[in-house]
Amino acid sequence: MAAVPNNRLLIAREVCERFRISKTTMWAWINAGLLPQPHHLRQRAVWRATEIDAAEAKLLTPPRAA
Image (cartoon, rainbow, N blue to C red; front, top):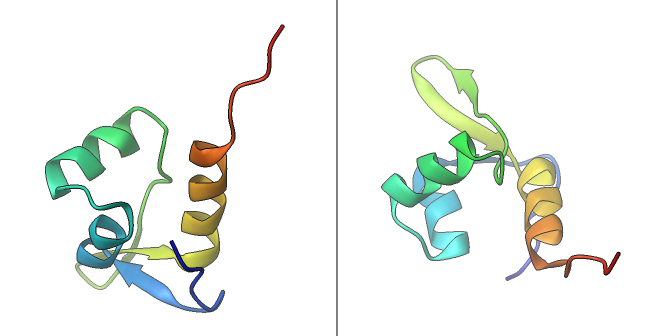
């Protein structure tokens, strides 16, 4: 998955496309803390590309052995 310029805002469709998930799964991941909460721009939920980059890196990092 390619990184997006860090000053860009992503809408729900773009977040879903990036992770290849449905909107239902996206909201489930948000509720589970796997993706960040959206910011609201007028009446639209948006995410900063940098926040999605960080969430992606966290999801792709294997858990450490204890």
